[in-house]
Length: 311
Length: 191
Image (cartoon, rainbow over all chains, first blue to last red; front, side, top):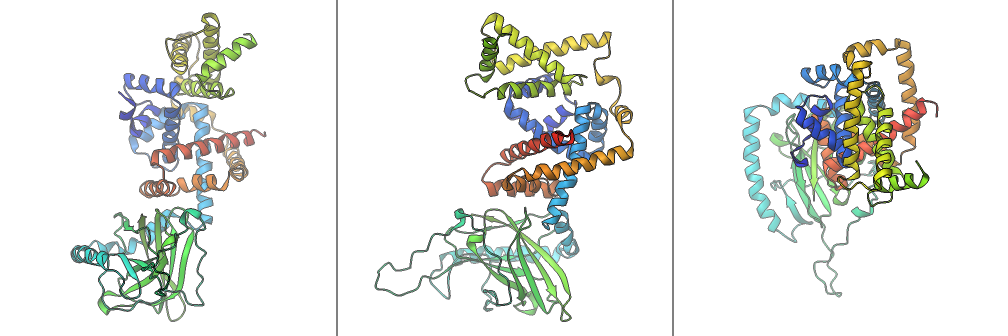
C-alpha cells in the first residue's frame, strides 16, 4: 500500500479502529513517522468529530464512534471542543450574513418548476442556441457601444437598462487587492495622432436560477474584460422594481449592489440586466441575490443565482 | 543524560534540519496521539518513555542508521505499546475495559457543570480567535460553514480563490484550528 492509495475514508476507518490489522499497522507507522500524514489525519479527524457533533454520521459510523472514539478522555475533550467551536463558528458566520443553508432553502420554491420536463427541454434548446451564438460573438469586434469578448446570450434587440448605477444606489467599493488591478487596455489604434477612444470589452452571460443540487454555472471571463454583463432570467415579473446584491459565497461579503432595477424583455421571458466591473470578479463562487419590491414598498425574495468565475 | 547527549539526540531527531527543539515536541505529540489511539490510559507517559529509550539507545550506540529517526521512534513506540498490553493483564492499564458510552456516562459531570464548561470554552474561543490574524480567522470560520455538499463546494471555491488544492487548504485549516484549540485549552485551564 503506498501513500497515494490512502484516501480520507480509509483514514476515517483508521480513526474509528475499523480497518484490518495490516492497514492499521501501516497507518500507525505513518501517523508517527510522517508529519504530513499526521496533519492530514488531524484534518480528517476534525471533520469526523464535527459530523458526529452535528448528527451527520451514518448509523454504522455513529455506533463505531460511540463504541470506540469516545473512550479516551483526550478524545472526549476534543468532542467538547468541537461542539463549542462549531457553535462559535456558526455564530460568527451568521453575524456576517452567511448561512449556506439559508441560501439553499431560498431556492427551494423553484424546485417544482425547474424539475419539469418542459423547462428541461427549453433549457436544452437554449443551450444549443447559446453555443452557436457564442462562436459568432467571440469573433465580433469593434461594433456597437463596446467590444464583446464573451457571451452566452442571444441579441434580442432589447436595449440594456441600468448598466450604470443611479444616484440613489450605493455601489459597494471594489476589492482593493492589487492582484485584481486591471492593466489598461491598449487603444485600438496605436498612432498618437488618433483620438478614437478605446472601447470597453464586455463579457455577457445569461444566468438561469439553478435546480436544487444542480451544478453551479461557470462563467469564463477573459483577462482583458472590462465589464461582465449578466442577464438574470426571471420566472415571472411580479414586482414593481428589483434589488440585486452580488456576494462572495464563502464570506457573504456584498461586493456590488443596485436597488432600483426593472425587468426588461418580452412578456414570455422577462429578465434583469446588470453590469459589473470585471476586475471585482475573482475565481471564486458568487451569488446574485434578487429581491422584488411591491408598489406598497414590501420586499420579497425572488431567488439566488450562484455562479463560479473562471479566468 | 548529559547535556551533550541531549543535544546529540535533538540534532538526530532534526535529521539534518535545525528545528530548535520543535522536532522533539512534534514527535512527542505524535507518539502521545499514537498511544491515545491505542486506548492507553497514560499516553503522555508512554510517549516520554519511548523518547527516553530512543535517547538512551542513541547515547549508547552514538548513531542509529538502520532507520530514519521518525521511523525508529515508531519502532520503539510499538515495542512500548506491546509491553503495556502485557502489563494490562496484571493491572488495568488500558481504557478498553469499558465501552465508550459507559465511559461517557461514568465521567459525565452534571448538566450545570457541562453548561459552565461550554460557556468557558466559548468565552475562550472568543478571546483566542482575536489572536488570529484576519486572514486566518476568515479562513478557519469560512472553512466550516454549511453542511456536507454545501461545505464541500464552499471549500473548493475557497481553495480556488487561494490558488491551492483542497488538500492544502484542509491542512491549513487543521493548523489554524489546532492552534486555536491549544489556546482554548490553556485558557480553560486558567493560563
